[in-house]
Image 1 (cartoon, protein in one colour):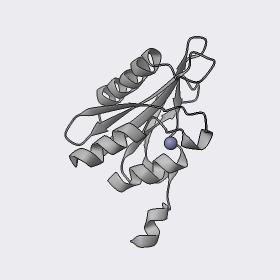
Image 2 (cartoon, rainbow, N blue to C red):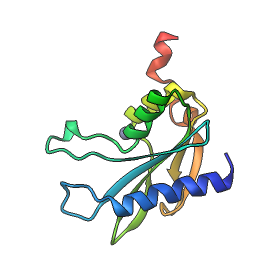
Image 3 (cartoon, rainbow, N blue to C red):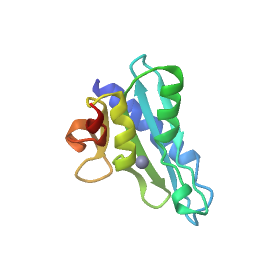
Image 4 (cartoon, rainbow, N blue to C red):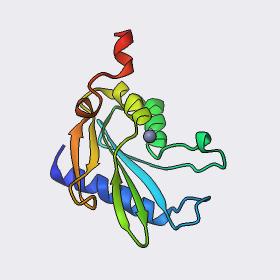
Length: 138
Ligand SMILES: [Zn+2]
C-alpha cells in the first residue's frame, strides 16, 4: 500500500465523516470508514446510530458487507471521527471489526491514530489481533 493510497483512504473517510453527521447524537459528530480492496475500489461506510446502543453498527460494517457481496478482498481500512470543534480523529478498528476484517487476511492494513491523534499510520491487522478467535477453527 503506497503512501498516496493511505492518504487517499484517510481523506475519503474524513470527507464522508464531515458530510454525514450521526443522527442521534447531540453533537455534529460524524464517523466514517474507508476500505481499499484488492481490485482497487474504495468502499465507504458510516456508523449507524440507534436508540439502543447494542443495535449501533461501526462504520466499517458497510464496506465489510460490500466486500463480501462482491467477493473482493479488503486490503486496508481506516475509520475517522469528525466534529466541528475537534476536526478529524482516527479511530482504531474495534475488536468486533478486527474479527470481521481478519476474514480478509491478517495482512489487512488498519489505520491507527499517530502520536498526535490528528495524523494516522497503518499497521497489519496481525499486530492488533495476534490471536483472532477465528484461529480456533483453523
Ligand atoms: Zn467496530
